[in-house]
Length: 309
Image 1 (cartoon, rainbow, N blue to C red):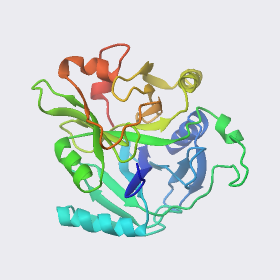
Image 2 (image 1 turned 90 degrees about the horizontal axis):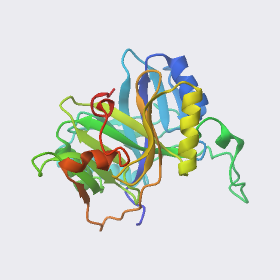
Image 3 (image 1 turned 180 degrees about the horizontal axis):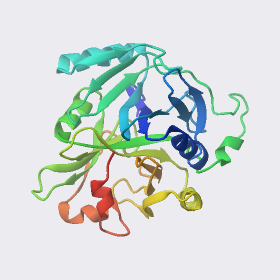
């Protein structure tokens, strides 16, 4: 599909209870590249194969969780148009000035009905991936540190009114529904997977009574073997693993869910099919929700349903 409008997930700001523990986890265990620190005390990271300056920002706080999740858009004209479209739709927006995040242009921030802060931005400094833009090598030494994902892939958010979130993302931001899980009534969505690209999902939401909750932030690996290697590294570092390695029925991806030292869940994810906007959404019924989420076990574990930050 043509890459216009909203391009991809761009960054997440994550709260951690102990900044040094968080830095060690995301830098040395997950293997992200530290790219800067700012006057507010925030620490910036990117995956080794990402070219933009940052995709994960950590800040120390009294509670874990997500401050905001952002998407990069095609250009400044697109940012202006989407800001106007959001306002016309009845969504209040806030302009965050360029430079408030390191090496990041002006951002448009707004709240979605599930209680989460979402941002759009068009500009972020290209710091490269350690390889030349002319005659490059296939990988860099940074690719061998820790789990070493290639990019920030998606987020799963928990909150109410996900049907309103879907309508906003589809009607205003140009996303489309890829998959969904139905509740017991066979009509109401329990969970939705939305894409702005030809990935299986760029954001997903689960219906939850408490607003503004993070279920997980996901990082992409390149193969099932890399997922297994990630499990080894997590065990070597005594990372608390939620479940996996296993496969999803939804998206067909392979996965491990685990927790950082502050209790934020993260995912190391691989695969998933490549949908397009003309594809009919795939539906999972209530009696097969376990198979849809964890295809091998065919059941959900209690932590997956209840532990959020």
